[in-house]
Image (tube, rainbow, N blue to C red; front, side):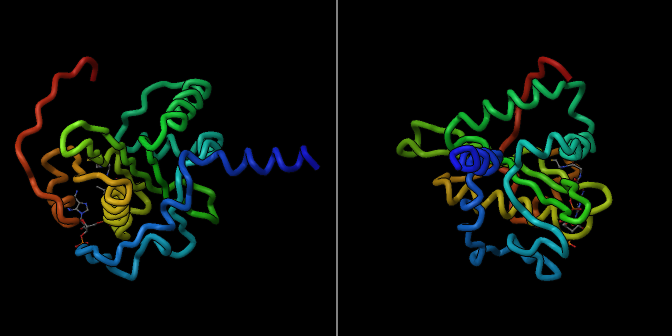
Length: 193
Ligand SMILES: CC(C)(COP(=O)(O)OP(=O)(O)OC[C@H]1O[C@@H](n2cnc3c(N)ncnc32)[C@H](O)[C@@H]1OP(=O)(O)O)[C@@H](O)C(=O)NCCC(=O)NCCS
């Protein structure tokens, strides 16, 4: 009996963060119109939005998705899992959520919210939306917009005073459609490509 309980706990713990957090998000206040009734609870037929799970690496498809803007490079399973565990052990900081095509058991979209803790703004936090990607075969279905709106409301729920993101000039129009505005300049010094 004890054996069975331990297995159940392990399965639940495979998520990077508590799935209830997504279920508790209320997006009623959004000013972004998602066509076709697309929503957090209903991203599309046969699609489910949920936290990233360690199992998604075994399926391979999550990394295939990240390769679509080819930024993954060469990594080994152990490196990936130890990074996943590091993120998971850092409380309330990394929130990677994905959209799965349940029939194909394939991750078709993903985005990350990182929460940066601050002393300013009365020890507030800032959300950063990162790594927004939709599989080429699933683009144009409002999933990109949904990911960003979920990222926005997740940041809000986590107590952030604002959320921001960085993007190339070619993506500005896309992010403007979900209410983001250019605010200042972004400067960078790269240490590798
Ligand atoms: C950018 C990306 C996330 C958009 O995903 P998507 O699911 O196709 O987008 P949506 O279906 O939600 O489109 C939302 C709207 O933005 C528009 N749009 C999509 N991509 C756009 C782009 N590159 N530039 C301008 N508008 C764009 C769509 O026409 C649509 O308009 P509508 O709602 O008025 O019909 C997707 O193309 C992608 O994954 N690209 C590669 C990774 C990437 O560049 N990510 C961004 C990193 S900053």
